Length: 343
Image (tube, rainbow, N blue to C red; front, side, top):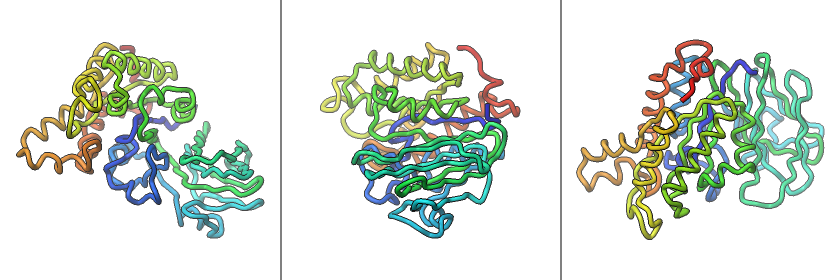
């Protein structure tokens, strides 16, 4: 088991970071975008990572664009570092956990990954044409920090981004935009985005808005939430839940026959029944809005009717940080696993 403990934040577009402004830096973003946003953008996951890092001494470093291409003789295609056959990319610093994002190609492409000079993985990056031609590879170093090297085995290899983590905790953004729970919990998504990380904790957004838009009933949604918690626990991880922000506009039809607040309340009920710690960010945002004149509310927390702006992301991060610290999860080096308890 790696010494570093992984905190995964699971969810859809709010977790991914939409509304924080980071999406504006992407080249031609698409619906359901997978490409991670820069650590510097004020999304709630980034803000939470920063707070945890300040508290625990955990370190997260990102390499992307020019920073990546400079590590492989400056070769680049678009926003990805380009490795031709026989070329390699070596990071200058050691880490305990890496998250590598490759850009897939329609022509034959194979990469080799080495830790401290020892081959760990060979990956086929050949993919059919799609809007989401990216593949994420987790690398956990079981016995301490190791250097990372990527080599092109055949064809050419495109490395879009590398995240490197050291210290007690690594907080990983596992958000996928426009993704309701009935898709997020499928093996195609779950076994790629959650299981490989061996998480100590999974913070679940619950994907409330997209599930509401699928016209699920609150009962159907509650069953999916309960299933998600069961899947988290089956990994040996401790689950947390948080409610999703309010939305603007119609709260039922034409979007759904059910009221959006009923879906939010379902998260509260499932958390209570399952004994799962809950950050009620929806309630804290509603309280914030209630103190404002009606005409000021849309711009106070929202970038559009469906997504929070940077202030909304800040409220998400603050509520989750308070929940985690109140649960005494950072009180000792043993951290999360020491403090796990049955509901």
